Length: 254
Image 1 (cartoon, helix red, strand yellow):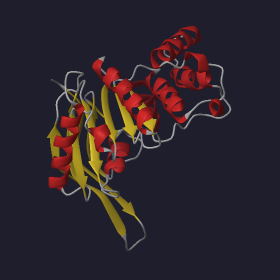
Image 2 (cartoon, one colour):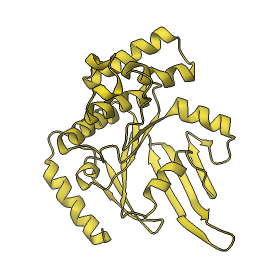
Image 3 (cartoon, helix red, strand yellow):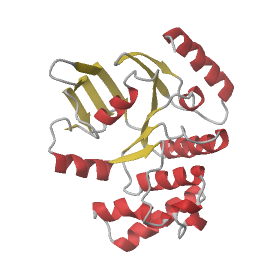
Image 4 (cartoon, one colour):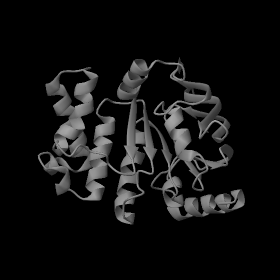
């Protein structure tokens, strides 16, 4: 299957002062085929979130190549890169990062209006379909203070999907949720992936990572290994996947 995303010899160095620098990514190479669901794990400071931000163009790599659908994004101008992120990528973070001055429906449709790909009526229709799919239709007119954390993450997922991205990035998308809400979000992400959307997420939670197809382990800015779990399905025993992953992570030193 064709790779939708490829990073080669990716480095990220932060210049702390004239005399000091911190290298967070070290010649990272990673490829993700279209339709795959992958996760990245590692101890705090291992570089996993930095990898996500650099590979998605949210931050600029110091050196290296990043291909998204055969487009080299590491050398794109800011305007072109912003347009690419808006139109082809979706983002879900640990906090929902919704706009307090907009109600829930308006938060979801806002990126659609910004992309200007379809008319406003069609964007609203698409948003309401996503809300129905996520089970939050009744919240459309609510302020963001009138919803639970789990509901707000569903809103954030709707917002991330409004422009029908080819890849969805998640930075600890379940990190602020209780176990039930986290499981619900992973059910939603698994369904989204089942419909063809490629997903890459960073997580510290082995239960979350065990729901993904392939797990990368990072340490000291390097991908030390990967664990292939295969597609998650209802026939599989989730505990067996978690046990296999946990044993592998222990071998990797996490």
